[in-house]
Image (cartoon, rainbow, N blue to C red; front, side, top):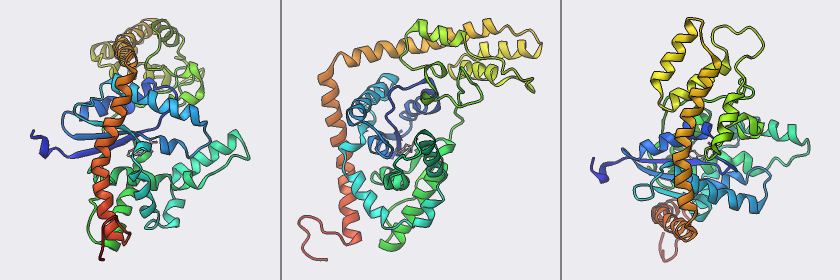
Length: 342
Ligand code: TRP
């Protein structure tokens, strides 16, 4: 396909301290594939991470580490733009304009705000619930539209936010004239991995180290975690227990379709040996992860390269975003440098 004809995709990932296989299979692996067909712009969204209490040095560090993780996984700076959100201040500028076309009522309907508020209060009943957390989906709309991206690969949990982005684009167009194209979600059937230690919950870092496998984990740690994964929930499960289904899902995600078919068959015949399944899962993960570890080590050994790349990528993103902002300023009655008449 001609480079000029490729449609533009935008997606963002929050900087958490470690990327785990749930993040990889649930998003990043797909990002890597999309590079073949789309013009991709990917961002480590550190501004979003500021909406809940955080440590500045920690955030600074995690953001750079997440960028390196993305590169190690195969996000390719030769073909795509992969950058740190806070280095492109146009996101914040457009977010303000969008703040002024979004109704308070529609923000109060965002279920993720309610969930996050509950989570924060559960951890600390006096936790600060910031206006930033409430306005979070507006910043997300700005992330996408400041590049006029047409497609957004997101999980089901972000569906409502994307719907809001579409409404914001339409509201802007209604008030200031046709300008933005409402972005479309790109849903792919992505695996949702469960915690290894408690397969009734989604794999997540916040549950603790036993529950997830980090993408750059040492081989023996990977094996240990898989071998001690919970397979039986204790209660008589209808059909396959979630723990076993999760292990089979990991095999599938690693592309081990034959092994997956084999163990599924054994399960139906009533002869599935958990130990064999776990060994097979551990092998598949070690194979995948070792490639990433090598690449990551190579990237990290060249700190100059990382710093240069951060700047080069942010410059590329800004070249697009600043042009869009110039047009948005004009349409919304703001003053641009050098503009004399209305
Ligand atoms: N809110 C998204 C998440 O938590 C991350 C994100 C921020 C994003 N800005 C975005 C995703 C723009 C897609 C497009 O997963």
